[in-house]
Length: 210
Length: 108
Image 1: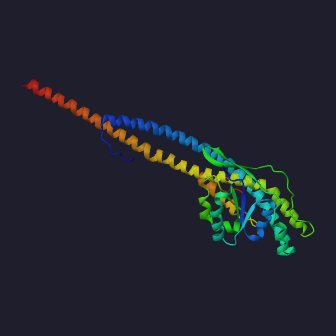
Image 2: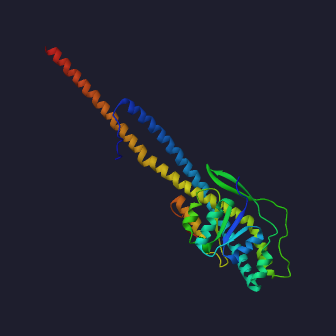
Image 3: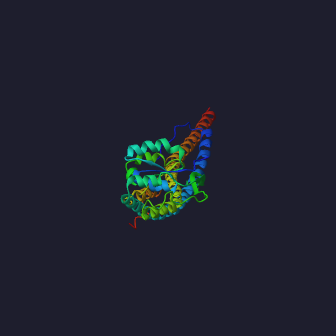
């Protein structure tokens, strides 16, 4: 049995509580709908996230293995010198997206005029280095996409959890408590009315007996 | 409004590959170094990639960055291949949102 709220059993309090109950029930329904929709979108995003991550991880691990191999073929300083001055920069168009009123990142690689793909001369380094750097460059768009999707998933998961707590608080605490208090006040008021009636009857009898 | 740059934090042998691709790189040999760099650079970048071997020991710090849209901090595999940390992250998200892992438990 839900605990009763600590209020005076008056008509005014009853009216307030009834209004509050109506709001709580409406809010509960809306939050529950929101929760359903968020979970639906989350499931889609999580699948996408998983697909992207698997692709990125496979390709990136391959590229980085190649890179490690290329490094081991040359002297350290040769590679470091070759890569010391990158010939281009990646720019990202970063905006704020909105998924179910959660502010999420929305990122795209900005198109940029092509610089030299390789910032070094081919004479100094091995071909594995070319290959791994080409792959990493190609992968960067996917990496940014993965970052956006994964972050959206993270934030949506947190929001769903928060929302669930709100729904539960309404469903299992607020609504039962209010209902219980309304019942209590109604009974108390009825009881007062009955006792008033009985008292009146008694008084009437006493007057007639005189 | 937001920064438009990418950064990579990782082992110094690995990060050079990303430097050539046009990202900013920071070399870190252990998790506490990486945390320090992350704290300093968080405002300057919109995405910061961290290699898994470092990220595995920074769970708490990474958790903090999950609540805001930017910067996005994402683990990526290192040269030794994926340790499954990224996938574990997705799994944790699903468990958090749905209560149990209903999506992925059939496979792997």
